[in-house]
Length: 315
Image (cartoon, rainbow, N blue to C red; front, side):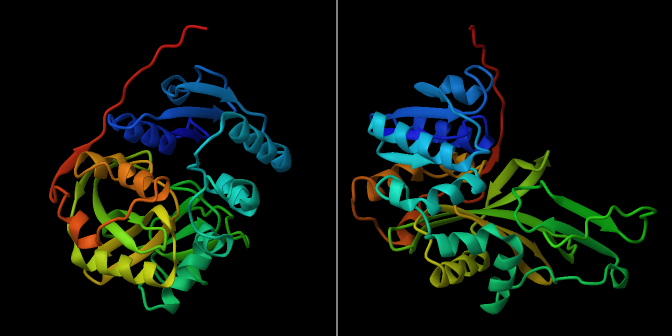
């Protein structure tokens, strides 16, 4: 099996590499690309063969480069962990239709826009942090980029203590009430029809630089049922993740990302390597069991902590 993984300098790509390297019973070649040269990221060293890409500022040139590389290497699967890049690939699905798995462009566009995604969740009866139009009626608000990744583009305003407020009130951003609570990221694997076959909520116990550093796998039936409801309305084949905040008032949807999460390795370590199941179903077209079967394989309650390694490259 030949896999092309783009943007290998990103945390999500390292997660893919770690998960794939644990598949000892499958022969897999990982090709990696990035705009940074070989050796300037751990990911470029960990893949089997690395290619430095042209700048992705010229989108047409970049897409054609990836397409030609996939064709030249006879790639079976194209993987990306960058939402803006995924948008490019899905827009050009006619080039990657046989090696790219995920939602169609219409569905992807909904969840790429964090504001639109929250509106759609409201429409199907799922709680979100309330939208805010006048900050001076609130105590604390959060300003978010409509198109954003992770904690980037987030600005919190505490009206009780703020002496200065940055001008972040543009049309490409939106405001919501800031709510306290436990943060959850949920890893979801669906079959080729978009039906969930694995739903694993991970409670964030410690966060460093916006990334979950210590988490716990929690068999939270309420969160799992909300995920079932979301995926009954939106078909997202393959791997994705959903983020929630849970407090006394309920469970509040934050965002859905139609890709592997940067810390999804925690589900692999605390359960089973669902990446193998993804490969078997989507690439080898093997049938899968129902959700209830795979949920039993998770070590619920397990706590997973992250570690870092250093890598040396000698040019």
